[in-house]
Amino acid sequence: MVLGARGNWSFILVFRGTKLVALVTVAIAIAVATVVFQTITANRILTPAVMGFDALYILIQASLVFAFGGLGYAMLGAELKFAIDLVVLSAAALGLFGTLLGRGVQDLFRMLLVGVVFGVLFRSLTNLLSRLNDPSEFAVFQGSLFASFNRIDTSLLIVTVPLVAVLCGIIWKKRTVLDVMALGRETATGLGVCYQREVVTGLALVAGLVAVSTALVGVVSFFGLLVSALSYEFIKTHRHGPIFVSASLISIIVLVGGQAVFERVLGMAATLGIVIEFLGGLVFLLLILKKVRT
Image (cartoon, rainbow, N blue to C red; front, side):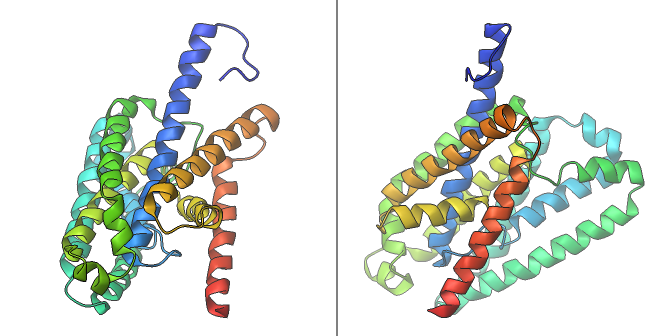
């Protein structure tokens, strides 16, 4: 908050405080969404990006630019764009994936396969719309693709902070249910958990958290995998309460600490989002190699 601060303190504290709240909100949303998604899919390598959530977000932005033009897209209110993202992502989670969950483990793998296929479809449609746009509109669209922790739209905080608090509160109350779900479908059903209902609810909660993080900073594919893997490594437990807390703390430390280092020490000589995606990609490859060896 006060590192390298000079000038008007009232402005500095408000500016940095708002940015700090935004980074903490994004960090918690990504960490919790990834852990919940990995529990639902019973796989610690998968992330919401694998299911096509990020690809769908990019398709939404491409569709808005194509429909309204670059100027019209820029003039759309941040709250309206966030509402569109939230509604479409939630509808996709419930409509595309929730209805595919029947009885038996194979339906879960079918859901993952459908998620990958839809991810390819969304990216193909995005490429088509991008080619139909003129270069100036494409430049506007291109600017929304990359994660940026420097130009966070703080006007959304009045909506996103309460939303994340509510969603995380619901997930926290369901932490014991998630503990049982981690034992597997048959065991959870035998212990009285309505597995299909909880999976659909979990997907809707994940969609809401993903919508918040992408609306604030853009697409972040591997950051959730990075912090969840570190949390599982440090916290040797299967209980979701400690995992949620540790993953959120690690996520906050990485985002806030990394942004402070890049801004105040390195003088913005590099981009935090690129470094995080690079490290997350390495963790993804290491986890795959580790699973193959075992």
